[in-house]
Length: 162
Image 1: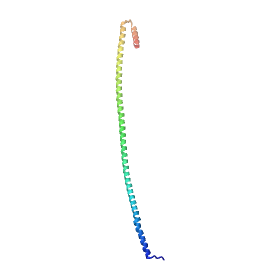
Image 2 (image 1 turned 45 degrees about the vertical axis):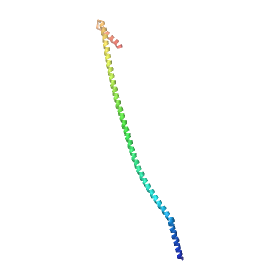
Image 3 (image 1 turned 90 degrees about the horizontal axis):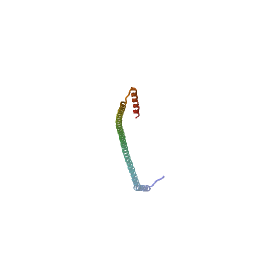
Image 4 (image 1 turned 180 degrees about the horizontal axis):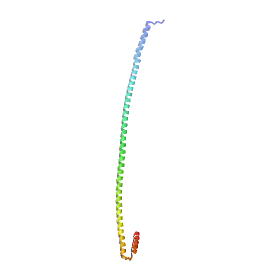
């Protein structure tokens, strides 16, 4: 069987404990320190990512709010433009109707004036024609009514030709 001596166990234990001590001082300390730094870095990165995600959510909400405000402003501007256009069209229609009424009134007045002038001229011509006929009748003496009627008809034909 195998038996180990007390000296071998002692020196093996001393060597093992020395190596263990040296590894703890030289390797495990820096390894554990690196692992701790890496753990802290990962935790900080996760926190930063969560903060960035929260800020992104806030910015997204702000952007949605700004977009809604911009849409509302656009609708307001379009409504104002539509209303302004309708007002301009209504005013233009009103002005055109007033202008049309003014032109019609002026045309009616001119027609009435022309009618009055034509009637006055017609009256003047009738009076002149009547006077001419009366003069002709008075200058000529007639023996019978047939000659007188014929003369009136001849004068009317002559007058109509003028």
